[in-house]
Structures are given as structure tokens and as C-alpha cells.
Image 1 (spheres, helix red, strand yellow):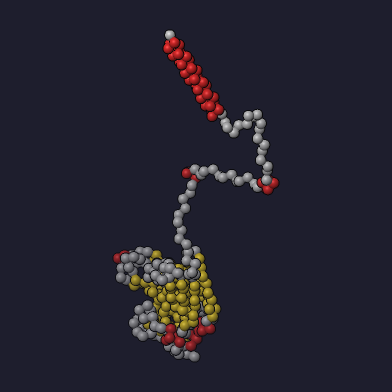
Image 2 (cartoon, rainbow, N blue to C red; image 1 turned 30 degrees about the vertical axis):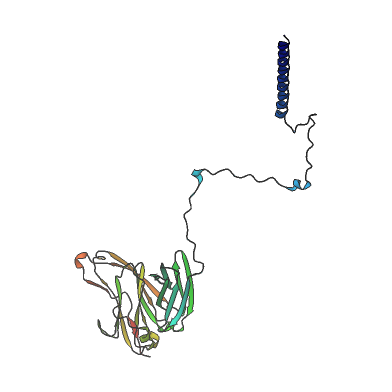
Length: 303
């Protein structure tokens, strides 16, 4: 009986111990679940002091919203121009009252050369350079080179320009019209016959022996042929007969050729005449059309 009573007392003590431990664990878990920073008396924390300089700060700007894909414009890439290369135009005097023109256009391009009433189209080379000799039509000669919507101009004094008389024929497109000058009774292909096949030289003119022919333009646009004669220092007297010719070809048969004829007068100034030449039909291919009265012949007296 004593043994049983002793066992019952042990069970009671063990049961009470387990209950006490359980109660203690519940109290600890409840304490851990609460905020350790929370004040027991629920007193609110005081705000931090404000920096006086903060009032001078402005709020950051609002960022714009996103752009819809439908409103985005694609911009093509444009190559930057070469600032180290600027177009240049140089004019120099040459024998026979000629202007030696050098145009540096920085790249290969088509240009329009204008001097007085003469306007022609030319092409720079792969290096962007154009060299051309142009008869001076005035003592104060102005030359303009136009390209890609821009233009560059230069002026040169040509004291001998008034010693020369000029006739010119201007046209558009491929070679069609040809200027012929028959000096002092010369026949076709004789020495005094000046044309594209025998243009002569400005040096010949400086000696007063006769005129010379200059061809301008590359055939891509406006072209011209100019005959220049040193009327003010000629060593000969007589008549220079002036003729314009055109060959009937498959390209121009039955077509109308529009051109402009220019001629300087003995007292200066330039006369301009518009030309509308109706070419024969294609059955006349190979035929030669001659315009003999387009220009006034030059009549020169020996000085």
C-alpha cells in the first residue's frame, strides 16, 4: 500500500511540472510575437527636427509618360558633310582673252556654269574638280557655278575682252548643231575653216591671224560652241562667213531642235536669237541642214 501511495504522489508531481512548463512556454511565445520596439505605455515617438535648408529644395520634375509606338517617327541616317572641304572657284587670265576656270566641288557632281548669256552643264571628275577655259564676254567677267541648290561666284578683270567678237550657238542635250567659220574666203576643210574638227587655238588669235572655237558642256544638259575672233587686232581683212549646220540622224529626224544664237556687235553688247529648227523626216537621214543666215558675217578691215 505504501508503494502505491508513493507512485501516485510521483505522478501528481510530474503532471504539475508538465503543466507549469507548458504555461511558461506559452508566455514566452506571446512575448516574442509582440513588437519589441513598441512602448509599453503606447507613447508616440517625437518627430525628427527639420533641416531649414530643405525648404529651398524643389520637388523633382515629373517625367513624361511613355510614347506610343504609333507616334514614333523614324529618321533616316544622314552623312555629315566634310567640314574640311569647302567648294572653291578660281579664275585666271589666259591668252586670247580666255578665262581658265578651276572649280573644286569636293566630290563628283553635275554643275551648271554661267557666264553672261552662256549657260552650260558640266561634270566634275572623281576628285570633284572641273577645269574649263571660257571666252571672256566682258572686261569685267562674272562666272557662276551652281550645284545642288547652291552657287559660288567669282569676278575677274579681262582688259583684252573688248578686242574680240564672239558668236555662239546654245542647245540642250546631245550634240546636234555645229558652228562653222570660213575665214577670208576659205572653203570646207581648208586652213581658214574653223569648226569642232579644227578648232584652232587662242594663241593664234593673240597673233591676230584668225579666230578659234571653244566647246562647252558635256552633252548631259545645256551645251554651247563659241567662235571668238580678234577683230580688234586682226592682221587680215575681208569677210568671215558664219554658218550653223546639223546632220539628220535617227535621234533627231522629224524632231524640232530649239536653240539660242548669240552674237556680239562691233560696238559691244550681245544680240540673242531663238532658233526653232524643224529637222527633215527620217527618210532623209544623212542629209545636212545648213543655217546660213542665222548670224551676220564679220566684215573686217585691216588696221
